[in-house]
Length: 256
Length: 258
Image (cartoon, rainbow over all chains, first blue to last red; front, side, top):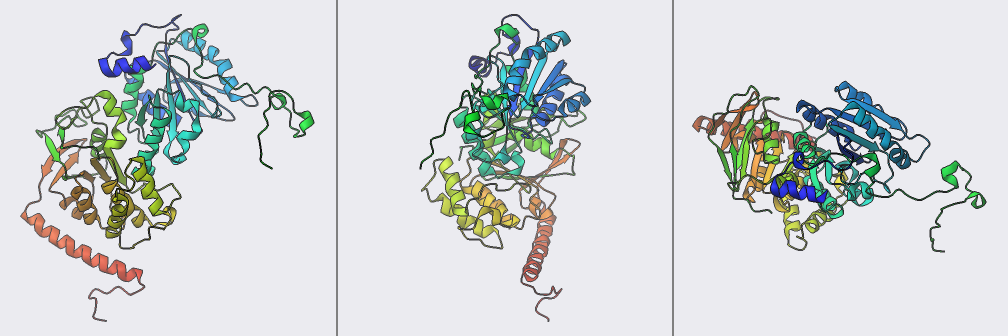
């Protein structure tokens, strides 16, 4: 992705001139991640409105843990949308395991753009896919320490969208942006107001320029590996008894 | 502060597609431009055009020139936080720091610690509010007016942005005219969206917005100079009543006749 950024910025080349990779699934793909209630859906609804006005056919797949009605919101905007709830499963694995089906859906429907939105993934993980535009949405109200705590969904992102900047002081906005830059040095930082949509035409422009034709499922890889914590708790164990623990567990070192 | 000599607004079109009739609007360091018009008249779009350094590609079609040139796409998207500061009624401090710690924190972020600017920012904040506060006061405990005073003083002294957008600072409990003078005096360019006559007249020019476009540019005329004097007297009286109210006194039309 870095080279696309550079090309766009320094040579003014749009994605239309970049050849599709691999099997040619027919759509461009963008992953949108961020902590719960950071404003992902609000921001996306504004951005997708600009893109549909520009004639793009768009599908949204929303991944969440426990409950969501966001697909309804997209459908109300006339955008095709599906949603998946991980429920009792690890949300990260649920997401990665279902992405191939979602991509097949995108091909069947003939989308120009497939947006994969995920909330509730743990901060250890990131849904971003190699060579596909990766967006991270962060809320200023999370405080200036938030960028440090978010992990790979921020660090492996190409674009970082900052929401609710209208509610915090200018000083905190400035420091927040400096911290974001520290953890995602190459990323574009785009402030957007999810309520009024201010900044969304600009973000739509970024998506238009940077979203790349997706690779086939078999050629697609995550940017960041999933955790390897396969333990008794993953299998439904609830007892805290040490004798019941098995598998990949790591003990903290706690001073006496 | 990022260096900026001039900011220029080139005309676009209003919501109905009519071309705006001004040639160009040029601001220099220390300039103040009021933006007036009813809700929905296009004030926010204009301020957003400036924040994003529009280059003919926003709904208004306006172009914004920074020191005579359009910014590159990357500068436009990336620089908006450091280029344009915003102060509005809705902003809050989230951090649980003392005033002193907060100013130190902001100064450090810009590599400005031990520059003396922290003390200056605190000193300026005390000139803007009727209710002084200690440098050891905690941010969450500040009143709305005290917070606004600190934000304005902080943006004026420690902020990185050469352009400041001030939105509806009507009843903030700060000395608004002193605030404008402070921002402009520090070489910032101030754009002020307001419905307040005293605020609007405190700028040498005001843009009148309507139907999404700039309808006209007015400079205060001699009659408005008189109006401004009248507004000052009214304002002074309100301040007297306000401080009487605060200190538990009764309000009197003719103070001192009790």
